[in-house]
Image (cartoon, rainbow, N blue to C red; front, side, top):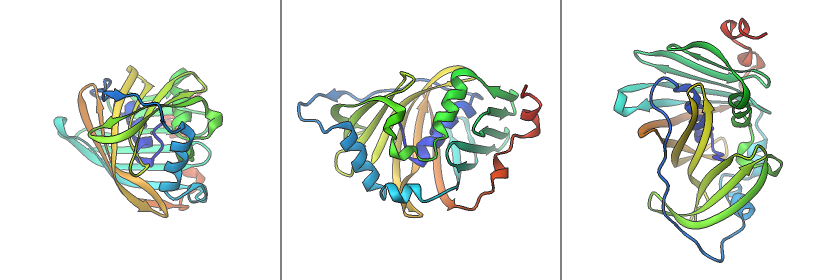
Length: 259
């Protein structure tokens, strides 16, 4: 879940996790080109400063985020938990009433998904590459080595808020689009595409309700539209440096699939 904030990182993983129902499709805001746009790296530096600075982001060695996940139009709602540890280990758990538990993880090598509708599966190829990419513990910093190019392409509006639109081309050649508030410097939106068991999935996400979690400002609320269906993620609590490495061990169902 480039959309760098904690909530956006979860948003990306939900593209894979909800191979249960509706996914894919996004609406872009109209753009207005200008001749005096700030450099993309300057926009990102301002963002990192706004959320507390690089040192604040780097000082933690594990993170547990707790919140809620909802698909209002389908009447789905449940608890959300995201466990993460550098450089790229992550487990996401969503418990949906009437559906069951959905789990997704990456242990640094193996990407996997356990879905009550599809059973356990390994994510291979591009889906695995995306899992590694989205598990980047320090993704807020936008490490330049992970991108071919970074460009500010327009000053526009995202959901009515003046924003700089950045096009970030990854080392793989894939594009991420991010929108940063002209006034605050904070990330307020993104357009991303990820490979899922259902094929390529695109989502437009908005980020709001920024809160201080352990000295790092993060969007506590995310709305994501995929295939016309809105999903809502709300982060209520974040705990740092409380995890043991054992939480990233592969579940038995997944170990049985690993060759």
